[in-house]
Image 1 (tube, rainbow, N blue to C red):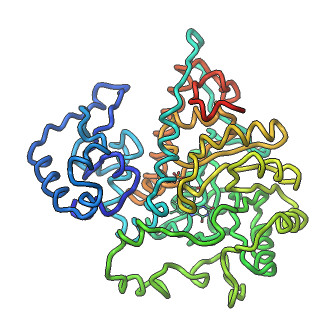
Image 2 (tube, protein in one colour):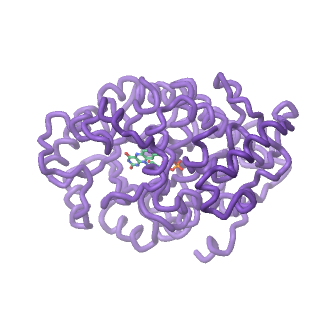
Image 3 (spheres, rainbow, N blue to C red):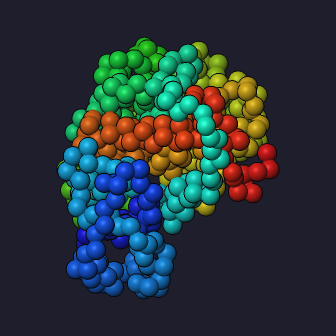
Length: 447
Ligand SMILES: Cc1cc2nc3c(=O)[nH]c(=O)nc-3n(C[C@H](O)[C@H](O)[C@H](O)COP(=O)(O)O)c2cc1C
């Protein structure tokens, strides 16, 4: 409890403390309702808030509570779940993971940049969109399967690339890959993976879609791509939204003040260097940056010429850039803002999605990620034109809490929620879901 308000994950932002939250929950089963009138816990919480410099900086406890939904009626149990099956939503796994993952690693995962505004916006964006259900259609035949670049997947939900998964669970990416295999889920692997692509592909039983952080040297870039190709990968996703570094302020505030324990594993307290990341094995990274701030459309052309497989760009947020993607021969777009981890005060990705989709039409598929925490969020993104919808932090919560079984449970929960939404909205196939199934706020409307 004592460290909570210093780590401002979106859960903390919406008022969850040691398992308490005030989110109103329309439950699907009575036994999902957990009421916890616990005045002692509440008193302790209020005492804690009163002593917190973070709360003071917001104007005190009353102002803090006003920003959060603590005053609402349905509260979560203060008990943290002890098995994946107990999780009723993905945030139950967040709480479980928070207690298990090292504080510095947790802070790295949870944080956004500056005031975490983009991080919050991504989640909030979905709350401004409502569903428009159609009734009296047979809901016994809901089929969530999708085909993406010729490969079949059990649902439109995919696992985003996230670096350094061993920071959250010893098996890291292997645990994620095993869960993805078991559930038939599309898995993007980060260039910053803590497990080599060859091993991950083996665990997955097919090649990952490989995310690419282009190093500042073309030679290094080519070597990574040749390795990825030799490992059987046919799809790459070039990340373009985080080339200059970032101001991960909440990470810096929340990580332990004594960073000396970081250097027992890492060369520096700043986190893993290229030498600690297997995708750079055998590549001379002296003087080479892992992120290339000089990337431009000429670089895209060079990459397009070199890479014979499918080429996606991750991090496109405007119609202008979407048009350039098509003009430069890119095969797919992933609308993303890095989960609010790169640039502050961006729009929610769900609000950027419609203009990108309107621009490219049916010419290339558009994917989206950022802030997806419910099956209804997935439904809304598909309704607004996404062919598939990515999750980052939620599966890391599952991973940190219970390894493979936790990732599996996150997928099971989100797929279950999506299936309910599809059935209740009268959509039997993912391709049935379209714009008529959502009511959007004005800012999503002009395309
Ligand atoms: C801990 C962490 C590490 C990430 N590492 C990468 C990465 O290596 N490459 C990348 O393109 N995106 C990375 N991302 C961004 C995700 O791919 C994705 O865009 C984002 O997590 C989606 O938002 P969400 O966390 O709200 O679901 C990372 C995100 C997190 C939380």
